[in-house]
Length: 221
Image 1 (tube, helix red, strand yellow):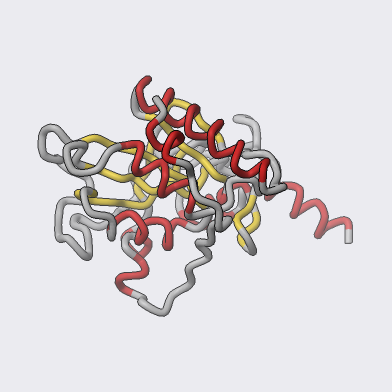
Image 2 (cartoon, one colour):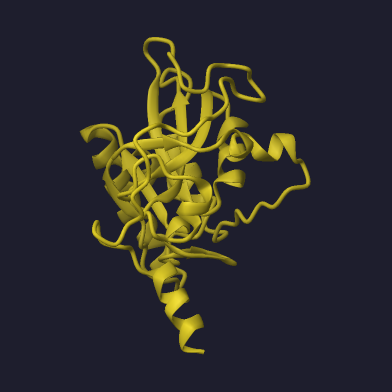
């Protein structure tokens, strides 16, 4: 019983830099192109497009949500927010890299705003669960927004506060979403890119609270 408790604690507690797995200097192999749009996964991306980074639990369902959204040019899944350089999926799932499962969203700001992406983010998962999403338990499944610039940071914080008011009014808990400037993003292995396009009956644990993000939250910042 002690062993099981110890393992669970490791999955729910972020490691320190000294505790994290060493990783590797060379990036792991990934796909060259998006399985749905056929656009280049790693770029170069057209001029004028912007990047956003969201963690919403298992990245398979979260990525599908965004690639199906008009105005999104390309998506990719990967790992960010931890210590281990160029981690693998297996390493990230141990909780010993410190990374969260993240979706990179490359979008056209003339077709969809960052505020619209934030609304989709808040409404499509439960941001109050700390180190889990539903049955997916561990630090890799934490809610996270990694911001690409100061404007994104201000918008994310304002939307968080407005959505918190909605959650509080409904008797829900406090938002635990990590909102920090974007750290290094490591592309996941090819088999995880657009996983649900390749495996239509595959697992998707994405589930929102059922509460809408108010217009003032989406327009804040």
